[in-house]
Length: 261
Length: 289
Image 1 (cartoon, rainbow over the protein chains, first blue to last red):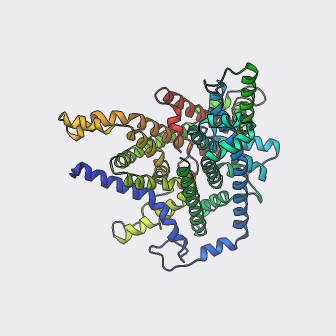
Image 2: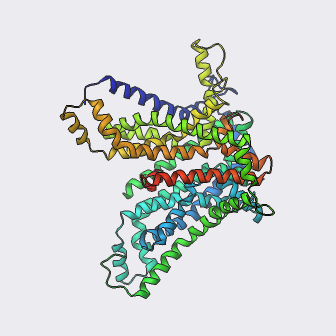
Image 3: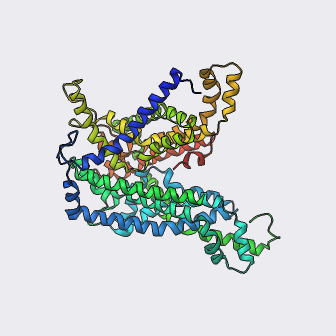
């Protein structure tokens, strides 16, 4: 295998090019965000924090940031317990119907998001949830549930339910034995699932485009609107911050998952 | 629960079932209320407007804009899937054939963009591809071009950015499948005198086909419903089905037509999943994220 055949060299070169293609757009944003130029010039004429200043001093961007963080946090606090309960139920029950329920809970991953978005918009229009915070949170809980469920189910797969039965035979009730025995062992996958739900809510754009408005517009909606009109380097600053936040969360989640394996 | 349990009474069993259903029900309720009900309503709205009507579907299947948009969406999705396979297969193959440390590095680079917002990447591609963008400046600097190339606000830009977003969905299932191919098989082929390329074509490639199918399905289906990228990078000319849906809602208030388009799109997606599930399990396609 050490001999470098032409095919092998071609393989290396193609793969290297593909990897450059994959990461170049992720890496290009940071230098733009720290450039003083209004328009893109490469290399950037000089270092500047003006786009970050512009972001932090703009009340509309700040309000949108608050909405995004509020929605993402509330989503995690609601979607995580619901998802853990559901994953536990699915893994411990041998009812036939559970398979169907399991599939239904993954529907948000299957239905094209644009269809979900329009459907929710029609529903919210009827019940008066358009442009409200609860409406936005509920939609993101629904979208985040599959991530929690998939992560927790994976964690439960390596957990032996007999342990919980032992705890119960020793006199603990069901709830206590879950919190004392099961939860500590699947904690990592629960945290990872919660983090994925947070990222999903933070990045969610399409549903927000349809159902959010007024003072309850998340960052992504404002960014989308801004991108449609003109290329404002402020967005590069926001993008850099968002990307940094995502990466830190993913590192946290994967460190968690590895620990729990 | 397990067979080792000492003969549980029926009453106990029933309580157990009820408890598990109770645990699942809050999540199920959210899903029913926020995706099953709205999409069901969408379907209803597409056939009912002061009485039953198939008018919306007649329009979708006969009017030019609808037809062209569906055709364009399928064409773009096919192209994106083919390109993603061509780019993704070598990367997955390399990741599978190098020592562990290297394969982790390669896979991290593949997954890295995965966790960057789609919106952020659309912005990055605009910055790279626009007339005054990085690539055009670079080409000018090298004196390759005198006029900036139109790389974005067209189908080309849409495809470049869409492949970029969907490539991880291709590489990951491919890699997962290749991992399961025993390397002895390749050695066996070699020891029997087959050239490396012959062993690849006759042994490795066929065994990696389930991964190819899983990756292609995911990429194709996700691409069918893509919205943000074509909207921001397509320049208004690349009208994909998802944009048709949103325009019918936001600009023209044509809720019936929007619903019919959405239903046709959804049925296409479900039909593809159903067809593919006869060959490989759906968990394999969906369990990637």
